[in-house]
Image (cartoon, rainbow, N blue to C red; front, side):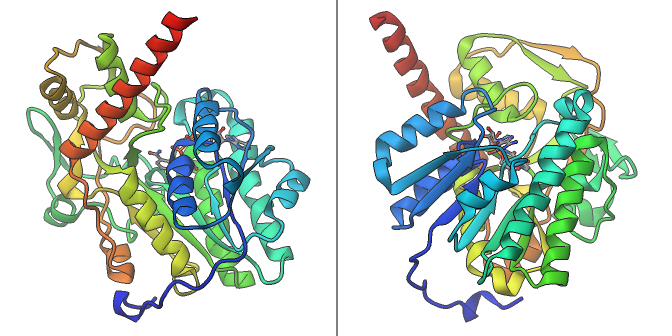
Length: 361
Ligand SMILES: NC(=O)c1ccc[n+]([C@@H]2O[C@H](COP(=O)([O-])OP(=O)(O)OC[C@H]3O[C@@H](n4cnc5c(N)ncnc54)[C@H](O)[C@@H]3O)[C@@H](O)[C@H]2O)c1
């Protein structure tokens, strides 16, 4: 790894960027940024996530022929090979993203997340020069973290260990895949690191906590911040699984795209390493605290009902991002309140457009 000060100027980019899962939430935000910077972008997606077709329509309307859409499945290696031809950089996001779905469909979860990633790595290995790869892994590779000692405060769980309380969970924490999703993403994470070591690919892993922001099709199974906000705006009750005191660090998507671009820029130096990425202790919130914030920002009472804890749910996960910060200089800059305000505004605009369209039809 090199220090932030030894970075070089951006070289000219003649070869496109491939984003798998290119219609999804994170991909849409990243594509916007890359195209605005003058890159040619190829999106590869099977459009399986409900709502992502709206992201594609938005990108196509904004950017027209500056982007190419390849509709295909990550499990189809030939379709993926065609999309990856000539790519200089690859961001690999395509995934079965929900723990809940992995519990009911573990084979599909494995095929998409583990086998799909292996397809991509093989395609990268075939090419000369090989494209660099940034892969989005997950905090779920550290398991349910049931061994953490936690004190029960009125609105949140608080780790008793000073270091974890101050800095969060670092990459030194033992891997403990839990849930089929944890296993399939964890397997993919390890394959990416190994292909860097064994085959010399410039491949980097970012283990991410909860990301939120515009273009997120949040639902009960994944994307909980966007889901909570959308439910609150619609005046619908939220279901909280557990007691609501579980803690997460959340990261606004523009901070994540900055980290993704930095990881890609420095992929040669960072190859074979995994980094925890999230908002860190400064952007941590429990579910109850977020609901309180949403109530204040929307000036509405947010109704909640409680249900049983979900399998593999972590009582506490907050990212220690210092390793990535030391390697690249990155740190999050968008505060929780500003990020939530921006997402609320985006959701408002979307609801406005939707009701205008309904009224006109
Ligand atoms: N959003 C988060 O909080 C978060 C946290 C940790 C890790 N991640 C990881 O980041 C990546 C992107 O997440 P996101 O929030 O943008 O999710 P998303 O669901 O919005 O995007 C994923 C995209 O992948 C596509 N896809 C699913 N299966 C596919 C397949 N078989 N072939 C091709 N495309 C397929 C979907 O249609 C969707 O557009 C995922 O790999 C996810 O596991 C996300």
